[in-house]
Image (spheres, rainbow, N blue to C red):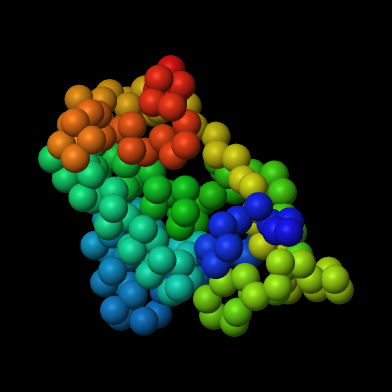
Length: 173
């Protein structure tokens, strides 16, 4: 039973409803600057991501880089929006927490240890569902920049790999 709905062992973000913080570790700042240049240019090292989240996101974006590398504009647009949604210090303008749960997590990793915290400890709240508000113009422009990028291993459009379990036709329609 997994009341968080997350894949076992998958990191979840903890609830944090305060001001963005500055990254301090020079190596993490360097990774963030490389990974999210638009966010870094706009906000410097001020971010809503902690060091563990930066590392996790960098690892997760390796797959996207491999899939979208044939078109630098598409890759940049995709990664910029992931960076804004994940780490942007102005998330309250476009992100809404729909659901959260009380869970025990391994300190410093956000890895779930216990799926449910019976004490409802407010320091152990993890986000299990969020909604992002984006304009149709932004979504359409994002899609247009990527729709013709081919991914040879599947002999098809790269964006179909970004749809998760949703069939490509439904993902883009």
